[in-house]
Length: 225
View: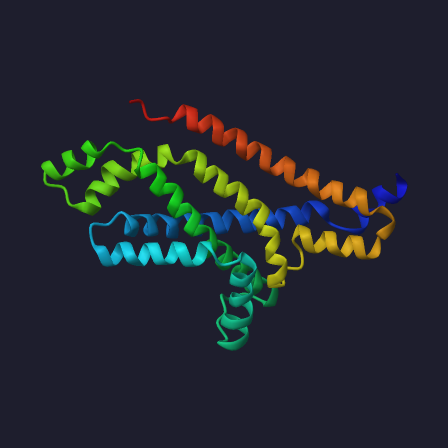
């Protein structure tokens, strides 16, 4: 037990999880914004816009997240010199956030589109009947109901994002949980199982409240039919 407790003085485990939470927070905002735009493209009456949205989703959703983050670090930064400001570590952090947001935006798009499918067709027809165009109808009538119907799939996407934030390790974010765990296992091989259980429990503590809140919101904000 003493050997196990010593790792909490040698390594900043709460700080490692805090980095993952920050990665999740900023990537979730970016994914929500981009995913909403993609959802609008996918339900647009313009065929070319629908094709763009569909192509993005099919391409990105079937590309491994590791490849996307490596592309951001090795191609955008390493070859093209693209930076997002800050020092060396801050730049890699932001590039990893960019990769996470770009990848999960495809899943957010599909979650919102599933919510759009729960909106009765008569709602859109009524919007057109009173003279609303596509964007005003989407902003005022369709999307507010779609978000309420998409709470569960959006929550599932957020949970996946929390767990996928560990992939930022390939983007040279050395202070997040999987990087710290790897270092701990390398230097403290005598307590591998307790180290693994510590990080597993840590993610359970983070993820379970998200699932509970998602379930509560889905019931609270369910659209009455």
